[in-house]
Amino acid sequence: MNNKKQKIIVILGQTSTGKSDFAVEVARHIGGEVISADSRQVYKGMNLGTGKITKKEMKKVPHHLLDVASPKKTFSVSNFKKLADKKIKQILKRGAVPIICGGTGFYIDAVVDGIVLPEVPPNKKLRVILSKKNTDELYLQLKKLDPIRAETIDRKNPVRLIRAIEIAQALGSVPTPSHRQGLWLGVLKIGLALPDEVLKEKIKVRLLARIKKGMIKEIENLHKEGISWKRMEALGLEYKYGALCLQNKITKQEMIEKLVTETWQYAKRQKTWFKRDKNTLWIDPRHLHEKAKAIRKIDQFLKQ
Image (tube, rainbow, N blue to C red):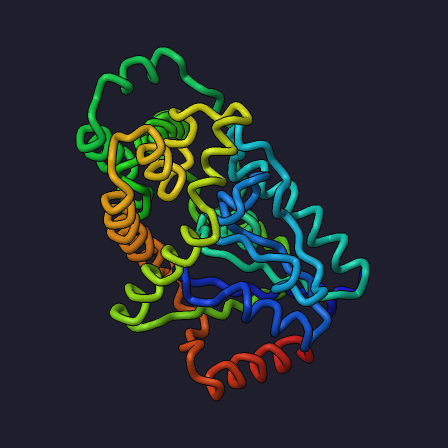
């Protein structure tokens, strides 16, 4: 493998900023293949709820790490790293450019920074103790153990909070990018960012469009295929509130309101995570000249 070719492009940003479309645009320009870095788009059958790119939207650009796991089972960051590392090597061997695209910051960091992730098995005794606590209590416990992870976690998701506490107790903290292994020779990160008010509106419009296309039916079908309501809650956001709506625990309007609010909270956590890296080139995807600037930067990076 030619060392000069061992370069990776990363397109990252908050939810609803247009990352997938821009990744396709870049891939067609440079001869790239896209690796999705989204912690829920790895699951089969979870399409509308996760805003997964469609075949038509891919415009014949190869996409990887979509639909690689059953939603019945938990897919970890370790699973993602193993598959992504393998895909990157295959793409480079073909003479193409790997483009990692997504909003799951921990997944991206695990791959591009080469974090070594020890496997932490489930601690059943600890889980029994933690399951008796509410989300506020779990969050405070995590904050004491690992304040960095606490900054970015979904503090309303008990399953994720318990898992994070489990990992933090076993390891001291969740591994961070300081555990760099120097796996790839060059990484260029392009971040897509929109003003808060614009992004808030986009989140709402996008959600309503997905509901109209049949998001609730998708959630209902997953349940019929054996995904429990408890597992739906663990999958978070659309699946959590869609499941509550289907069980008549909340109304459709309440589901929409909860999702808009919590997706915005999630977007703020994404921003916190991504802004830690000062080397990211940030652009506003609404402006063609900013996209053109990013593509020029990519061209220069690949020529180095």
